[in-house]
Length: 282
Ligand code: PAF
Image (cartoon, rainbow, N blue to C red; front, top):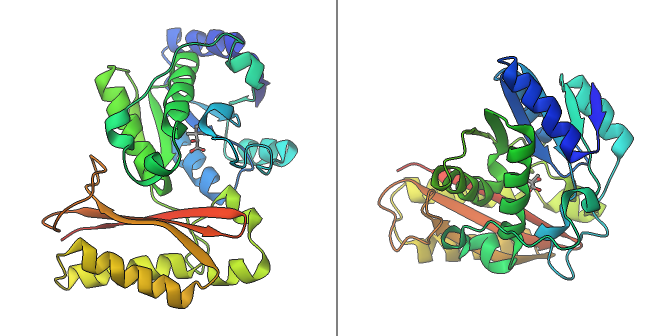
């Protein structure tokens, strides 16, 4: 496995692979890799000839007061995990190499960022879209794999790729969970023992909400109130940031459930802000 820090070197490497007719796959990450990231890498590995994994804690997607400075990191562990998944090239740039001091170009898909995390984290998706576009320009992938835990992120990136005619296939991967249902996240490292013990209730509540909708509840307000009450009972130390039922493509709240709907939540638990979602087919 080759480890590269310099963006231009990555681009040269990947352009050479493209000229040789090799299909490049990309898995962008912010590091502190876990089984969820490794599942993305293993899946990407089956879809390409050369696998590029990026580890870059992108400062532009963090707002003031968020956890940029405290985000967990383990570069040596990450290298071993990326290697174990068949990564050919690990890209680990510094922020200064990715963003010139007078960086002035931004990519944004504001229509899909008006709700859920986009509403709570102003500028977050602009930072994500900009860095992912830069990674696409550098790594020239034909396929890139993203987790569906960040459903809104994937929906926004799909729209970006379509609207800008970027020749890359975006592949979503199912949420990887602990045995007790908690979605894997680097931020789970922030949980205290008590918070960790309670956190599976996030998923359990979503599953109950999905059952309720599948049994016929069509009013999102009733479903949302049910889940809010459920979390008040099962997650007393949690602070609900949002509970929403949205259109899975447009990420706009639905007035009534008439087709597939995404139930998405964000819950603050101590230092962690955890997100999860469930796609409900009716
Ligand atoms: O999902 C993430 O880890 C990040 O938002 C991404 C896609 C790597 C961009 O920094």
